[in-house]
Length: 298
Image 1 (tube, rainbow, N blue to C red):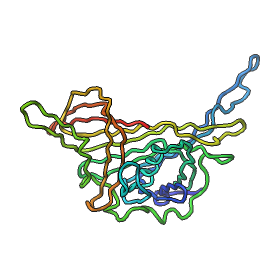
Image 2: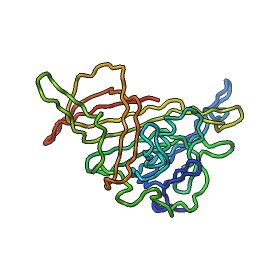
Image 3: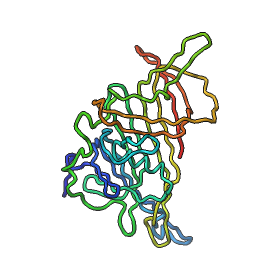
Image 4: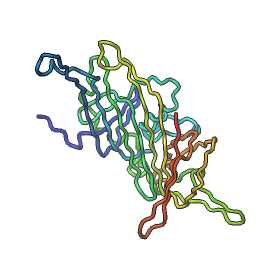
């Protein structure tokens, strides 16, 4: 019986010729097979169980938000903006793609590999805290291949690939700042203007995709990404209850930095985002912290 320990189970993601081994903290792999029993009048019991849907697998993992990978630039954030890590690069490419047909990314973990389609990606950043991220993929396979199959070779040698060092390669709230446009600003007639302070932000994006099957084939011929929903939840200290309908929307570029302030930040671009929610909470020995959520759709 083969045994795999944690030091033999890095998570590697590949897109074409570009690969990165992430600093993952956990990885979960699941499979499902939908079966439907068939009954006939005059016969006790079933005639058998038959597939009601294609076999499908999913893989999800958490990882430290690495920011020094250079896979290209993100749309709308300037020519010098880097992607940070391969998941951030993949998410930005999908949401800004004109052609919705997707080939998937090669995911490898703990002796298993498969072509996966990105379902969701998220990360958090807070004052004086290490940033963590998470990603989830659906794995369909293709042709006669199973959703997840194969063995890993030579992956463990490059754990942490794409980071410059243990300190500059991991996003941290020490130097990260949010765009000024995310601050809530309140001013009353004859009074000084108040501007909020941002203490943290939680970012997430989710994708919907539609696999295309043909008769006689269990796994999809292709898969199309249809829509994407993006949001960022900001924690601050100023509450503005005057939420009102506004047809205009604003775009924001988040810059997530490491402990080296001069290091290359990771860029995330929210296009035409609108505020959809605001709330406030208070705990013992703490200031009143408020939250507001901005969303964008693609």
